[in-house]
Length: 241
Image (cartoon, rainbow, N blue to C red; front, side):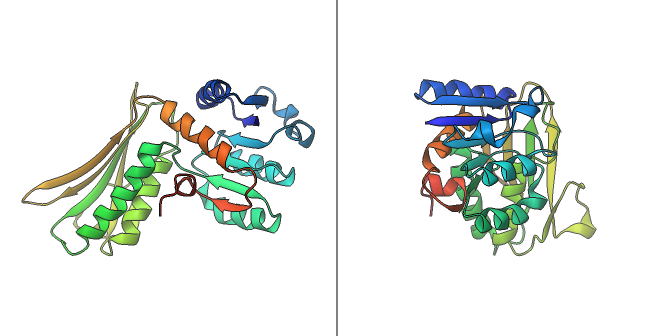
């Protein structure tokens, strides 16, 4: 399979290594140093594009892939206020787009555990809940896309929480779901969902040991997407119901 890499930072290089090991070909590598090379002519040789760039450029990058008729997967976070618009555009062009805040198989299992736990905790109001995420200092967006996904799933399954926030909690904001973001090195990524009461605490945790889990999942999604039309998520790749 021929893969276009849109974004060639640390994650892009990790994806390249795994893709080559799995027998794929990298047809182009677009970074901030060669943005002028990113055009339909370059994309025509690709079967699929993998987009890991920046929040400022992700939307435009994905649109350009869709316009070129190339299935595209993206793991860039920090731009999701435009995702609904992009989904509609993709469908209008009969395109193929898959977004995941985290491509790790373990994290996607963690998402399902998080939803199930939130549903169980619905009737136990003595427990409050918050999220902590820890990443390396090179990750500029706060909170992480994974933490936001966890928060949205909690809010959908726990009626006493209405909105997530990065503001520390107080007695007047009991319906807010607090996300604590910590940046330190080295830290590929840790996410903890914590339920606290006067009696006891319950926590679920996922810790990434390296970027390999994210990169492997991204390549797996890239292998799955070609030949399909529409909007997808990592749960579709993993056949999680």
